[in-house]
Image 1 (spheres, rainbow, N blue to C red):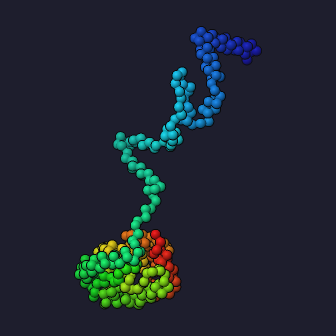
Image 2 (image 1 turned 180 degrees about the horizontal axis):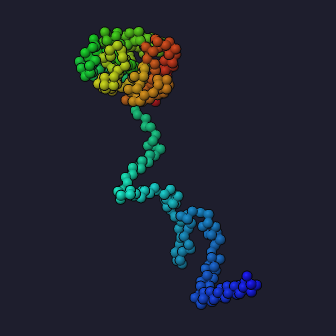
Image 3 (image 1 turned 90 degrees about the horizontal axis):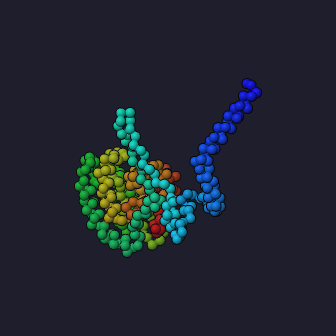
Length: 329
C-alpha cells in the first residue's frame, strides 16, 4: 500500500461525516436531541432512582398537569400489581395433517384450607347420650339380626349351621370387629366364643380391672362384638371379595345404629375393609382413623396372639391408646 492512500481514505471519511452533520443540522435533529438532554437533566434524581429500583407498576406517574393532584394507588391496586400473573392457556397445536391436538385440562388449584382434612363429628361418650343410643339401636339391631339369619345372598348360607349377626350393646360406645365366624361361632351363632373369643373376653376384663376408661364399665355386655362376614367360610379360609360385598352392608347398618365412640379392628381383613386401603398391620397400628363418626384403631386378632404370644403386649398398648382417645376430642 502506498503511503498516501491512508491519508486519502481518512480525508474521504472526514468529508462524508461533514456532509452528514450538515444534513442533520438542516433537518433540526441536533436541536431535538439537545432539548431531550436538557429535559432529562431537569428531572428529579429521586424519581430516576425509584424508577430504576422499584417495579414498574409501583412507580408513580409523571408530574400531573397544572390544577391536577396525584393520589397514591389504593391497596387493592398495589396487591394486584404484586400478585403473580395468571397462567395463560396454552396455544392450540396441530399435527402434520392439520388436526387439533387435544391437551388435558389443567388440574384445579387446591387451597391449603381445602387440602386440609376436615374432622368429622365424633359420636358421644356422655353416659346419658349412650343410654339413649342403646334404646334407639335395640330394635334396629334385632331387625338386622333377623335379616342376617335369613340371608342367602352368597353361597355361604348353604354350608353354614348358623349365621352370626353379632352381640352386645352400644352402652360403652366401643365396638370390636373381626374377620368371620369360626367353627365354634358357626355352631353357637355368637361371635368370638372359641379360644380367640375367650382371650378377647380376658382383654376386655383386664381393661375394666385397670379402669383404663374412667366412668365406663367394660364387659361383653357393654361392648359390641361383630365380624365383617356373618357366615363361616369353609375351612376358615379368607373371605372372598364377593362375600364381603354381600355381607358388609349389614355391619355398616349396625354401626350406624350403634354410633360407637371407638371401633377396634381385629386383624387385617377388618382393617382393610373399613379403612378402604391395604397395608401391613404393623404399619396401621398406633394411628387413629375415623369411620362413621367413630375413632378407629387397628390391632392384632386374638387368634394371632394365640399363635404368637409376643403380640399380646402390642395389643395391650393398643387398648391403652383406645382409652386415651375415648375421652379426647
